[in-house]
Length: 113
Image 1: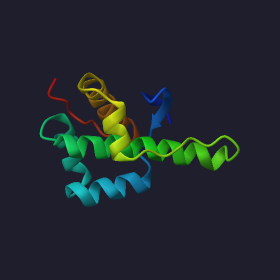
Image 2 (image 1 turned 135 degrees about the vertical axis):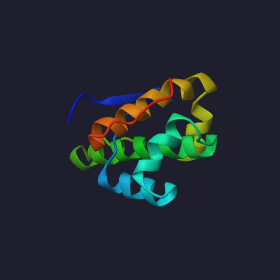
Image 3 (image 1 turned 90 degrees about the vertical axis):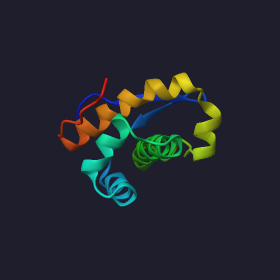
Image 4 (image 1 turned 30 degrees about the vertical axis):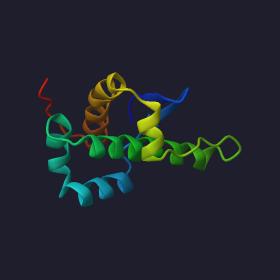
């Protein structure tokens, strides 16, 4: 795995990780992984965007917590992500989501930028 992709929420850094579990959940929600990249790059509702940020940040927290039970990172809810972000944060998170999908699936996810 390459360099970690992180975001900051509530003064805490969260690593975004596309685990196999997260990939399954994304596929179920969007009808396949091939559709996820297209949606992130263009046609994604705010609710879905917040859900993906929450999912990937919580996967990073879960992986951390497996190895560091004495110093756990708290899990996030979608409501917390909404309250801890402003629209400019979400604009910054978009390219990071694409980066995680590209890196962790070894696919090229096209961005419309």
